[in-house]
Length: 245
Image (cartoon, rainbow, N blue to C red; front, side, top):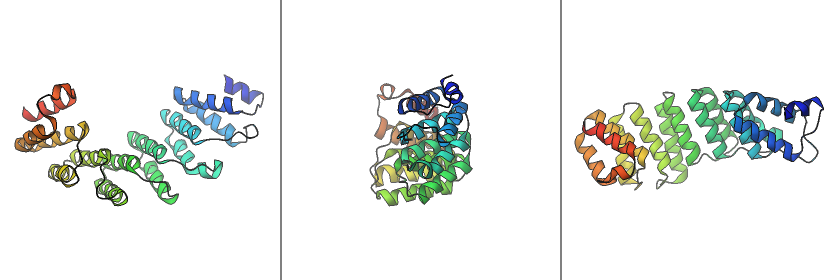
């Protein structure tokens, strides 16, 4: 209603109205309203001195993707530097990539990846984990591993971020590469000293169950979970039950 009135009377958006409208679009996941608002902003519908921020871009992307408009969200990332002299952040790119993964839009996810490299946007642990998940889900395990190796090269071989390691471990598990997953888990925990989180443990226990490798599963249970698993995470209980049955 407010946006229609603004368009009807051709009113320029001040800082407060722009921020409120964009936030409302994001909260409601209203892609059509976000598209209408974006059209007005890019057509010069802002009051003098009002500038679009990285927060506004993120909220517009959120609204567009909630409505299934991945193309428009990626376009914002790809053009925001030219439009508003704003460079996308790693976390915003990682968020868009994760949404591309959920929708199965490998082409758009690749576009974001290439854009990050071309614009020298940092591809740290957040974006790397998102890219590993995307390439793995879309069937490109080799590219997922390349992203992981590139991340370690940038961060150093002693990278302790469990999220990146878990993403790659889960990729091996999802592709039925159980032996590789076990070897990778050893590299992660023994070679680099990374403590596995609940998601890594779920993945590796599933691998042990599929390989019927009870000895390895029992060792992982003893070393990383212990006897009070019920107080830690019920999902780990389910993973253990699946392995032992």
